[in-house]
Image (cartoon, rainbow, N blue to C red; front, side):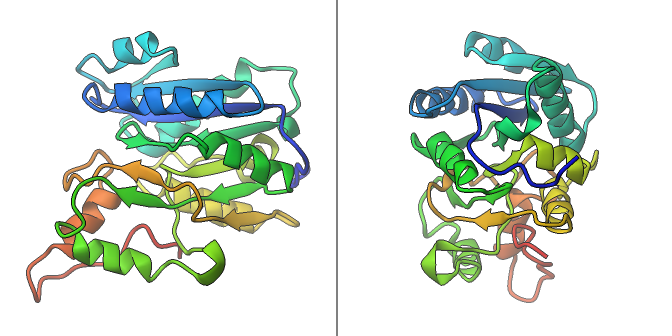
Length: 247
């Protein structure tokens, strides 16, 4: 299979992993419906309810999403399962013409988000890496925001990788081996695998950042929440590397 899809896409699938996100998911899905309404091609949303003990699955169905139940317990496996079911249910369609967009249940995409992804795909992108912005007052997470800003580049590029704001052509996703079934950093691993493909075009754009939760205790063990805890650690405490920065 060719690593490069190239050209306009004819459909978009959005995959959202969720674990006990009944408080955040309705807002996430409402934002995705607005974005889908502005997208020039059909959009389908798949919510992967992974080891949920609350009403996440029911709320996903009520919000118009295709719901998949998962017991994986790992965000990489949940994302991969969501992509797999979306592509399987579109069997017979051209993977080069399908775009897979990913976000998180605690995040809200801007209205132009999917239109931006479709436009990037039409311009030849195989992988689109976007940025995030935090909900809540800037003073609370000032250290994280300052560190994050150092990963932004002149002209709108950046060095960040987020599962909350990522899109990939389905043919490229399959050629790269898909999301690894890991507990964290499945987004980084996919980005590295795509970059290793011959002729794959990776675009990093800070346009249309996704609003994501500023909570310090997230579902992924080494995601943005872990970065916020590290950035807010007392002076002299080990902080570790910023997990949102691409290797």
